[in-house]
Image 1 (cartoon, rainbow, N blue to C red):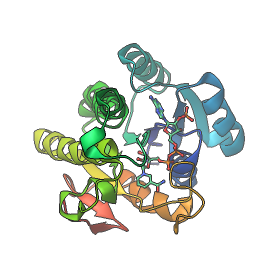
Image 2: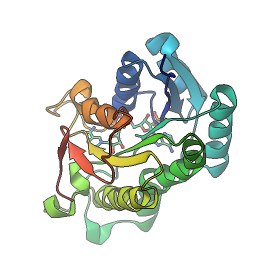
Image 3: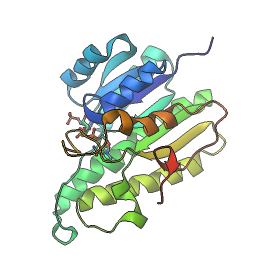
Image 4: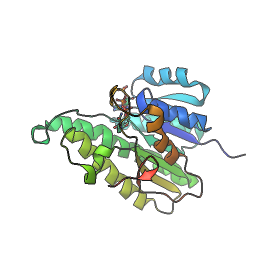
Length: 232
Ligand SMILES: NC(=O)c1ccc[n+]([C@@H]2O[C@H](COP(=O)([O-])OP(=O)(O)OC[C@H]3O[C@@H](n4cnc5c(N)ncnc54)[C@H](OP(=O)(O)O)[C@@H]3O)[C@@H](O)[C@H]2O)c1
């Protein structure tokens, strides 16, 4: 019988993260539903049931990342899947007037947090020769689609996250660890707002597909939207 895959989903207490966790559980994975506030992950656990396990994790804190990964590996002996979903946006604003502390705070979650956590889990994935890392990116991070300046810190952070996806994937060639980025599209969450055209179910589909690529899959270093390549 195949081993149950162990997954960590960041920002799993609401929005896309909660839906990604739900879909992974439905596919038979055991999910550590991570949230930065202690009550958040417990709440998602209450909603998602036995397939989810709460995990306290603030991706901006190196100590929190270390403690969370040690806790997860201590309980399960392995970590197979990481979905870097936690994210923040700077909203409307002009690139030419962007406060640098806003840029720093955005990069700290969307880029550094994702990279920090990836580097913490990779040794555990290497040890079993298997891993799936999914970085939840955005169409707004696509350089070739970048014709507006709204959410400048967010756009730059997601473009950088895409670059991180490529360098990590290249670094991990041949290890069994596949690293990809996914754009969920514009989704009705707290971040996307009520006017967004897509449901969380639709937005979660591509991240979940990448997180559950089969054992013999070779797809890595890509950016996908609705399971199709998205221009960088
Ligand atoms: N919604 C869209 O239209 C859309 C489009 C493209 C891409 N995305 C991406 O999809 C991902 C999820 O977005 P969403 O719409 O679900 O956003 P959301 O509803 O605003 O949820 C964001 C999640 O990230 C968590 N988070 C923020 N900072 C964190 C930190 N330092 N450590 C751990 N968790 C942290 C939040 O936790 P708290 O509850 O504690 O704040 C929350 O769980 C993000 O990466 C976003 O950029 C969304």
